[in-house]
Length: 585
Image 1 (cartoon, rainbow, N blue to C red):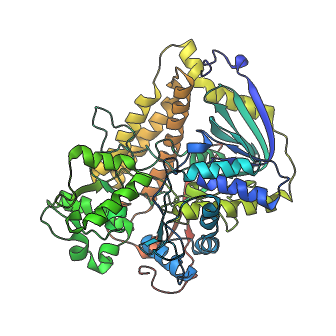
Image 2 (image 1 turned 135 degrees about the horizontal axis):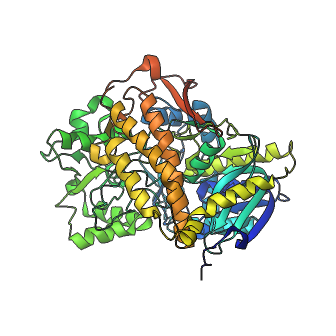
Image 3 (image 1 turned 90 degrees about the vertical axis):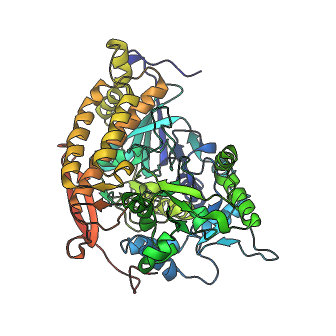
């Protein structure tokens, strides 16, 4: 039974924990970070802080049907960098991508030793492949396996604890603070080093499935990944990069199911209402069916805008065996999609699957949005390391890359520990955060009226959708729209003082919308700054429709002043390490 909301600050119980390394977020990257730290030094105290429950948390909660980045026999690190660079429109951190690729296969092979079933080629020990970099797995229990290993290595796990802010000594991160969504306690984690491994940001934009009946969180991404790791860094003054490279995916219309599994894995062409093979016929110069993902996201939008929608992936050429195999793939990752097809009585050999775009996300595992880090995965805040979806600069990490980056962050953090001791926390800092965290609960008790998180979230989502390039605007935006969005996001941020929470779960939702607003404000600044269109679909400026290499062949970064709240946006140069054409693999 969840605890009751407090009626005043004095009755809130506190729990204080000291640890060598604190890992915030026990998803894929966080678990591999914790395990790697214990491998490097079993005597270290390693603690994980998890909003949900480690057994089924993060992007792998429901399982996966493939590992999307694995360097197969005969392929090289240079090929991997070239492919990832081309997929991201020529703009990635090559230093980070190379260091990631050097250890990319290690966590996957270890996962298999722990019990993850990885499919093999017939009569061979080679992994079964799908596309250039995918290997197929039966991964419905992969997160459970990983969680069990975290416990076996002796890491401490605090489940159902919502992280709200870092603890700071000047700019140095010395731990984090949060509250228990089941017990209502304030949790204070004091740490020598902190690794942020939270997910990206979903739910900033209105999804097209939200139809007034309620498909509120029928998303491409985990709905419980709301960008809190980004928001905590933004509030602490960390440097962020490339938020404007949003992730918008081509999805199954009215279900939001994965499409690359069908179109890439089974080579089904994308067609429009006229039956034309869109990518092959209209985008041949960009790679046709192998065009970068932002092009693939933009294609259905363009076809609809130009009167040739709806669009489909044409499954009518698939063999009965292929259709059966594809459904088995989905049963490992998205079993409800198979039920969706069955409920509609859809025979894929006769009727293609309709596709459309998703709402936009900020997610560093797919694009390059996130903390600005060095090769040891250290952020610009001393004592803080970042990995996985929350770390920027390395798109196309996916499952394997996020796991590998967790290992790299742990190595950086363990090395950092040798130079630091435990720092005392200013009691005033804890008191201020305690008052901020529980304010919506106290307001509910004292005022009995206010804005519930759901109301503010819906206003934010509609605002971002209509004025900051949401799916209902075909991802298009201009300066005037973005200025309107920024003005009203700031109004919403000011109105967060009127949020109320009627139970601990709603208190969590209140902080989720506060964090989403923090991310949305920075995102708009990035979208406004990049006065060009570099990734049509992910970032389309109608007032600057062309690419401008002279000004913007670089990273757009930002930093918020924690004292004044001013957001400074600036650029960092792109550095090419692997030679060759950046736009073709």
